[in-house]
Length: 99
Image (cartoon, rainbow, N blue to C red; front, side, top):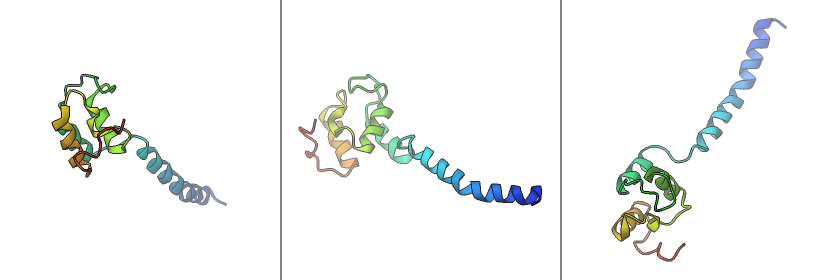
């Protein structure tokens, strides 16, 4: 086999693995894009930490993953919780007492 043939086999065999690696790595970063931007805009963006997160964007990512309830934003109050629930497609009161 020539060096060119080996290179072609190496590249063609590695490309699918490389693409799979990139795809899997991308999924571990958490939610990105318009949804997280829109949800972050609903939050008060005080970055107060009262919810246990260092920033409102971090809370927005957890909300999109469904790991926290829509009323997790303490400083936003009930109005923010209702807006978040509607954004996520939940009934306005479905999140109460979920903690």
